[in-house]
Image (tube, rainbow, N blue to C red; front, side, top):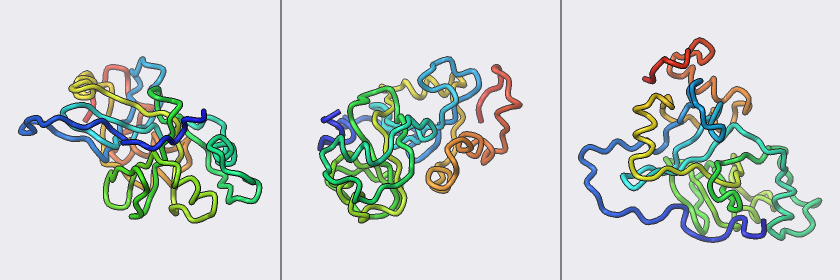
Length: 206
């Protein structure tokens, strides 16, 4: 996993396209419906970090993988991790694409070497400099580390939404950073007034 947090752009360049009929779901949650058959996404809550006519990129925020920040620090070559600031936060499986690459979803307005602003006060960073800052306890107040991401080609997410694979709602940083991971999916659904336990496989999305 030495390539984790390699410096580079978060997303490929987006070609110029007509946006007259396009609705971006950037800074929205994707709430997996009970009918979700894809095991990579069943039971997941995903934050859409970028969405354009060319496609979408998201980070799953409720599927921990059992690693600690200390282990991530060791993998990227940060020495003496026992003396570093070691957050007890879990590391999450961000998605099935490029699992050898790391992402940090974080609060704050500081910009690192490769950052994508999702909304005011919420960013996604792929460069290792943020990890070194976190190891010195100089990183963002709130963060979530995720190897891998979820990706959709042009029109793919829109088709999945029309097929009732997802519910969508505006993202909420309290759910991302303050709500226990086991409750994030239900919390996002409840923000729409939806109880996922009461939904059948045939119920559509809002």
